[in-house]
Length: 245
Length: 80
Image (tube, rainbow over all chains, first blue to last red; front, side, top):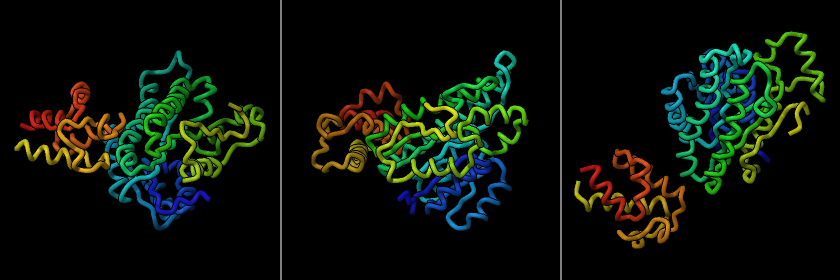
């Protein structure tokens, strides 16, 4: 079950903790993976670790032209595209009253707009080949909200709404569009949290621990698989029980 | 570009995209009523025409392209 043999996947933000785990998860199931991200060295190290069936496609998703070119580059490198994982994301936290326009815009642009542009580009060939998997990595805060993250929460909630609309548009072509919503996962993003905040976070998680990247990757592998063909427009929450929604 | 050449290319795209037999693709054939296209198919067809003929077909124009002949006429004008 859940074999991804002969599938070709593009993972954005593959130089980050969760993105890297997702790329490794897809690769382990037999997929060819295109690793996209901004940190060349991290991408090269991951590609070396994975060995065959990997391609490096450096891209800055804050750059609209780079975004529009990325799917084409992936299709050229791999001979097509079956799985798109919109994982790249960034945070610019701050209380709304003090949030600058720039901090709002960059988060929406990279987290939401790039995901839309990449999905739109990927759909062309996915619809033609009558198979496709688009998976957005959203966040628990896209559903619950979080003080200091109006921009981030909006971008992640936007991704869920967008995925539901896309899912309805392309369902007849055997293309599914879903989201995975991580809770607090061990990563550079959560490493930056101070101890006091960490304790208060753990107190709200029934599993009493942070999640691991591989646990997000497992959800992505499932949604990318043939077995998940009848699952579309859904958000799979992987959060240790911190929000049961 | 001659009209017959355009017609040939349009019909080839329609046959490929909708998987219908060539003889069914008459000029007065409606994509939706006669050739079994759904709304997504018509979007895909318009995008395929844009690609093949190197033109941009705005949404309000795309809405008027209902038959094979409509497409041939539109593309004949816009590539003239």
